Length: 121
Picture: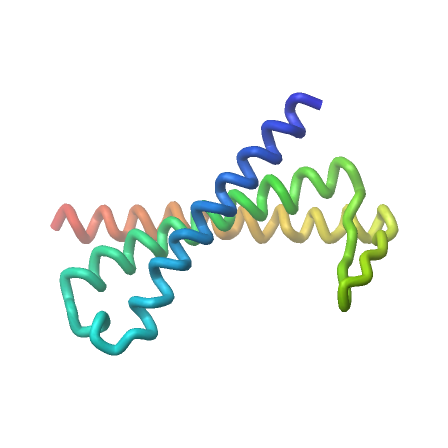
């Protein structure tokens, strides 16, 4: 029980951080004047991209992956009508989210290493 609450907290915090990073990145990409400021776009886009990959992957890994695989409970909401998904399908979807989160975490670490190597040069 304690471990599940901890995983939910990690997932909630990582989802919030990824959302904030997305909120910072979207205006830079779509506001024409901000694209022209090279120092801003180079540093902020790099850091925001890493934060979105890492914390988004952590969110997928914990909240949508491990918790759904363990509990087998997932509610699907279509047009404001919520209905439960059968446990085997929910666990399969949880495993898919788990793999997607692992892939995002791996990509974020490779992204960080590439940025660190470029920064060292």
